[in-house]
Image (tube, rainbow, N blue to C red; front, top):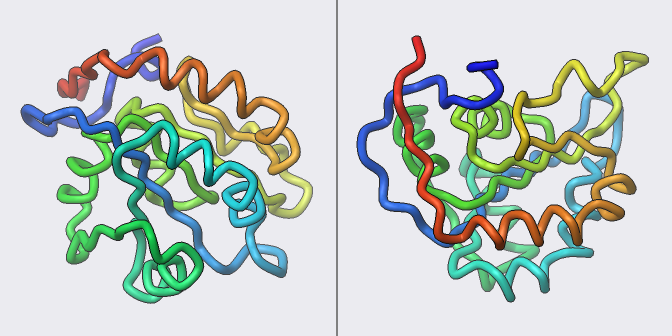
Length: 168
């Protein structure tokens, strides 16, 4: 039960921000562009209407390409420091991304996370799911269907503070 409800790392005090972190790679394990980008195209107006900050994370190349597509949003350079990235994500209201280490990180921090699933062979998507009530791992089509409910639940949590205590 603890794995699904408590953050797995000690991050110290964090100031909650009305921010969504985005991480979308530009390669899949199969071929083509990850479906995250199609999903983002469909929900960008909702993000702008409900979040004060919309921030891309990832490698310098990923952030630069993302900023070409959405120049009105910002990016965050963690300088290769996973703890810095964890603190940034940990103070965010939502992380939205493709399957990536950043999405896995936000899941163990218990930050509400939506992973837009691209198939990896015949493996079931559930094996990449985060544990907990505010962790979604959906195909792009499934996420679009659930998006109104997901957004409503995230917006309703606006004033909640997440405690980041060590569980290890």
